Image (cartoon, rainbow, N blue to C red; front, top):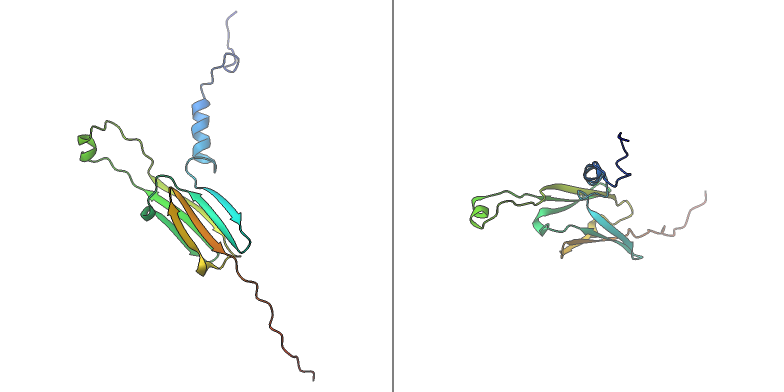
Length: 140
């Protein structure tokens, strides 16, 4: 008997690659996002952001009000030297990725950063809780 059969029945899924591409492009877990780990060390927070393939000069970290933004931009252009080196095709990502965090509990003026082996490590000291100073209140 001939007819239409389910594509899952015979193991073939013609939309598998499309769904994978769609998930990677539109999902936060895709390749176009910055993967981060955040640890609380007691007196500070440590953010470890994976930025493989980005040089230090391609990464930007800035604070605007209480928002910390990590962004990276990569440019890749084909040039004549590539042809001389025998490249037929070069497949490298270029574009911009960014990630933002609320840092209202952080002393923004004391944030430190280092970039090593494709990982950006930010240390964000917590704001010190200011205890009220004691003073005498006059009674009228």
